Length: 214
Image (cartoon, rainbow, N blue to C red; front, top):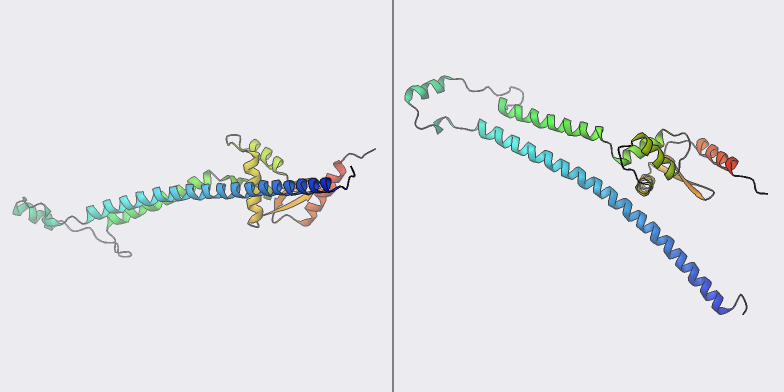
């Protein structure tokens, strides 16, 4: 049978179509995985915000309850006790804000909680932050495997997977915070601020490391 027979041509077309569909499927999986990871981070942030807002609401409600108790609530008090109570000066409102000391204290407590939350976030950066910092510290492009190895070494307490790192890198590329480059059959990533000279030098080094064929 001739190599150019209709059957062989049809098989070649099917093979090319299946290969293209497979590549498209893999890329779509990576895209969705990246979006899912980003949505999980957003959900975690929203949950933390919800807890903070709930605590602030409870603190403000408690402060308002204490500041709004009327003097006539204790109806069983004697006239002498009522007179003594009336003689006690009321808490002066803040000249600047008009809030009572109790409300001001609750506000300060809420502000302190906000600062604690911010410090907590700064103390535990996300994987996206770690990957971005790792790229910005490099003078030459790095592959996803190299970035994963560097993060694993720098943060052994974190479970850093190659697939998640690759998806994070692609997310940074999509947002313009990183640049993807291809050298021979490998894909490398660099920070958006990396100079073209560094990328060119990395390509030359990659060619130099390629063994010469006989």
